[in-house]
Image 1 (cartoon, rainbow, N blue to C red):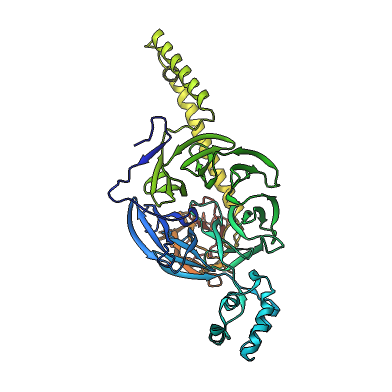
Image 2 (image 1 turned 135 degrees about the vertical axis):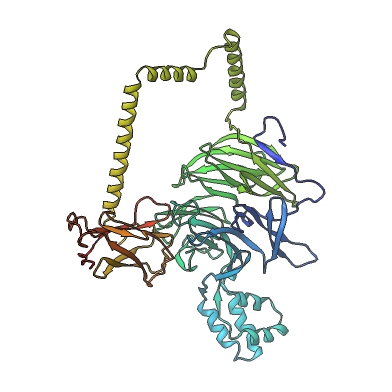
Length: 607
């Protein structure tokens, strides 16, 4: 039911008998079709920070409003993402959970892969101290550790930081235990998001973008989880990332906006390996978004302000808020052609902004701690909110919703329109609508001039067929090559070989993946020949995934049509029409990747 008659959101009544309690953050919530059944489920990390127990976390899966599955995590996660790693049908999502310096991947809610960010080189002084500690006497350890205390604490490895915190009695056993372990500085993952590889398909494989507390940004490719891009937030190491937002595709171009703990915002591009400082806030950031439509950067700060900047750091507008913002969330409303920004404030108020204008708001009993928007279950526009006490609220966007920038003006316009409609109805209640009048007049004209109308329809129909045929020929001719030239997919090479003397031939096709790391999948081979000269029992074949460096060979049976009287090829067979056209297609694309013509040899007589 709706909270008010004029509300744009329908409130889902969860019920008070079994309240849903979930302690999480916006970055630790995601939506995914984990069972590949078309039903999108809510996944969230329930974080427990009780004083009597050690901090722990569980990955919970909700089907609708019911908890269906939960799994303990080995640590406290910083982010959770759902992504696809290949184009193999049926597409199965993988859940990525960032914990400390590692990313744990789950497939079908079972452990699938683990990736650890590369370690940085340790300081020379730290390496020298660890070489001396196991071989020198215990009385000299204090002097060696005093040298490490002069080094910046953030530049030391974890085992050195732990060693400096121990007392004298515990140091000896610690040094003996960890003397052979590597000395390296590994950064914790503080932010994670997905970057689509291409934007042509609805659920394309996505790259994973990681930001660590050492100021490094990494991009992992989805198939082998290899590092394909790395950069630094800035030249100095005091800028520790805390928020991240991306836009674009990896194959073309992308932008990564990083917000740091000291209020700085930096922009990373694909061609650069070091970020460019855009702006510097005097207070800490609570939210950061890179809007995809107008390419503007939206931030919220602790000084109760909602600000929008360009990529060059120019302030476009700002809005003063009534309370401190807690989190922000983008709402992509494709059916309305709008992109809203939801801002949750302390006290339970949630405001929705269209650029600088406030278009909607509602109030919850408590402060909102996390928000998530997207398709959930069978509904396309679901907003999930969790409060600081762990209570969950579900709201669904109305299908007839309207977002007005000025409520008073909208109400006046609605009253004026209603009054005008009432006046028109009072004057003549039997007047035909304008569209109905146009339809009746068009039907009368077609009835009077039936022959001319039918001829005009046939002309337009043949013109449409001619345009379609010409577009098909142009698409095939533009793909006349043995190597695909589509940069958004793995390059493939096609070669053909004809065996036999006739009238039965065997056509062998070899497909080779020329990429070094991409997998070519969802490929289809289509053969076309003149039916007067050749017949084929199978003219289409779906190919399995083609791995790099491993060629795939398929064969087709082609039978030449002979004259039934003299068992010889027909006289109409010429070198121009004795060809078989081979097309290599990608599922979901109209233009072939490769189109080639195979010249068939002259068939022998069948005596």
